[in-house]
Image (tube, rainbow over all chains, first blue to last red; front, top):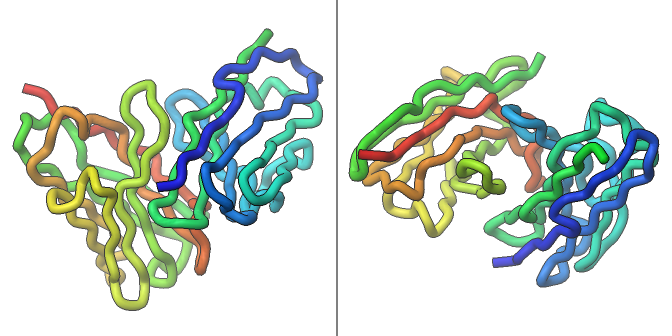
Length: 107
Length: 119
């Protein structure tokens, strides 16, 4: 199975900060990567797919980049609604696997 | 509005069985592959099972293979997960999710239903 590793596990930031989360795969997954946002007590919500395509209704302050084994999710200016846990997920090879998550906390 | 509404779940003893359901609305259910995922308390996300559209081919994580059965009823726009021989490690919040055509990500999720396996 392809292992996905996110860094950092926890990130403390302030409103207005530029935030970057990294996701690494143990094998080449081309651009078959998605990002999700999950708030406490809620289901995950799709943010990005195909590494850099914005999900429906997702604000443009979110962007994704990368290919192969290294990917990033960037929030250009952190908003109060963005404090949540973020997961990457590869869908290059079955079984599709997730990173362990990155919790974005208020500094 | 597209929606997945889950039901089922609850407390069950080890070795017991439970059936989860996921009712779809707002989209043509029969056109989409569907999946089940789970999230143990305080943990990350784990894919559990998937079912295709055309031939109802099914897929399972090794951790549930032989114990769980995924099925779909396109006439009722409903996805199901029959869980047998449940173990403590199956305790989790279970989500159903929709997969866009020829994709591997999840663009619509149910609200989640809690399964607790405990004596």
